[in-house]
Image (cartoon, rainbow, N blue to C red; front, side, top):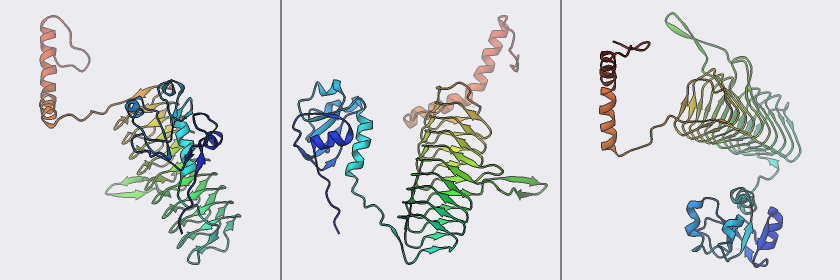
Length: 352
């Protein structure tokens, strides 16, 4: 069965997205694309000034623009103070993917003790354990495994092959992408002379409303209390969240971030790809951690930006840098000796 096309007049698109339009309100639009790729029946957007050069050449039926860029464009446009945000909202109108149909696949296995709400969809080979509560409008995709005593709020979507271990609690409108594991044991171990003793992970995981969990991301259950994601936390793919971490509302993390156990992260924080933390530290609200940076101590001041990554350079230049790094300690000692020779006393920990 083909998916029905979604076509809007420019005036209709403006009304649905809460924007003003300029140009031919009867212009028909059936999709969305980038400036360079858009066809004469698609809407596009400009948010990054680096792409302004493409505006004059675009074939788009209309472009989402701020007032400044609209002044330099003669074609149809949707006027927005934040074109990227408006693009995000308009994109939902052209999403071609089929939504789930309510109902339970014959191959699903649901314990008799489960409470299923209205309009729930349960896909092929899904398993739901005893004591679970699945609220109205939830979609449990194919291959999902939900352990005992889990709770899902209204309109959650577990896309496919997701594991929720025992006792996980998820709020409303949460999206979990394929392969995610929520509530597996944290890495809790104690060393006993010549072997490791496992520490029972008796907490669980709590996830607030409107969160999104990326593909193959893992969120460990707490050792004692719970691992907690507050409302509107957004995690990209392949992220590791350790046990007893708390992530404040509206925080976003890009791919391959790693957060060690018992870290407390504030609200509105941003972590770029491959960033991470050591455990047992606190990070203030609105902190930004740049790509490939590791936070090794608590950050107390809100709104700061942290970075420790070395950007890539040509390999020959990198080899020269490594040579200098190997000589750095000897060079520092030579500087100390020269300074001491001319009357400067060595500082704490410095060799004379």
